[in-house]
Length: 128
Image: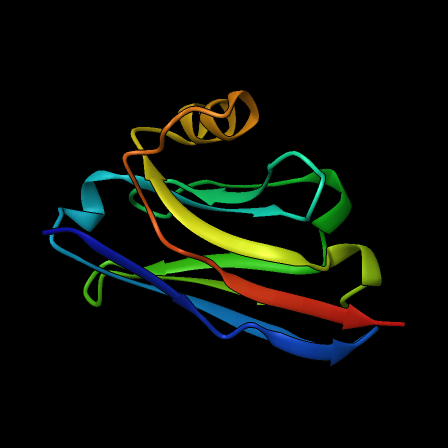
């Protein structure tokens, strides 16, 4: 049975850093593009970042470029998101998910579709 578990969220002051981790099992991690999306109460989901199955390409939402770094370790079936220079507007529940490609990942997040696999999320709160 597939499992996806996010961790690493918390409360941090503006300008601080957090590292999110997504630990997976039960599916072929290296067959999928993996990404992070977020959602705040009353707002729609938004794709934050995605990485190709082989780490050859990474993609970022415009507002996080230069501040966030996505990476993956296929040997450990684990996805990461290093978040630096955090802003209050980054406050949200962060989820990781799998898709057949990063194009599909962002499309499914935007359209409210079902990702191949996803976790229950980890809360990130940035105080001003």
